[in-house]
Image (cartoon, rainbow, N blue to C red; front, side, top):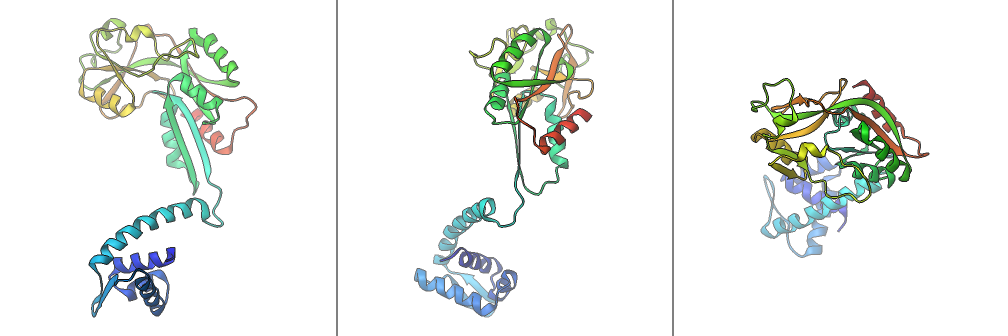
Length: 299
């Protein structure tokens, strides 16, 4: 039984008509009938019952078609990925970024405007150490970092050790995320003292042995109530449904985009953040990545 014969059977079952299936498959009706009969002889039972109004699937045929449908879908997926002739080369685009990176909004807009017929795009989100490791190991072509200016020397020392170079984009400010209607939502800015009254949400950062710095100001996470999560969807839902707050990043050109009932408030007395991107030394950027960086600079 060939893949084409499987396609004939599935199309005939869907159309409930050999003549209609032949039209859709661009094959002569006698050829389709012969193919169906050939498979029926091979399996030893009738797959279809013929009638004046068309064909219907037998009980054994239903079970058989369910089995071969799975095989057909898997084989079609493999063919589409590897065996299609004259298909343009698939463009591969992978970037890494820290949680709450301003680069995320630009990535979404870039994909919305991307006109490549075949591409594979990956957005990897994680801790600062994860982003550096992704770029160093070439899992991602570029990565986005943000860090307080007083940690610059430690960050650059780590980047040199991983043979990664940094390109500054702009400076940003830490901000506090909260739901609309939050007890602090009426304030223009939030102080550290204010945060002591609220649960603080953060990602699970673990202990890093390779870098002498953390993604967040430890003083922001020292409240009596701390909630640790390991994915953005859970964090967003907790922000929406509780009085918890989370630390984010904003810039003048690309502020945190409000949505889903979430507000961003400035954090009083916070250190400015260096924001930029990294790549492996002596590794040229592909055109797709350059286009993304140009879009990011226009944000």
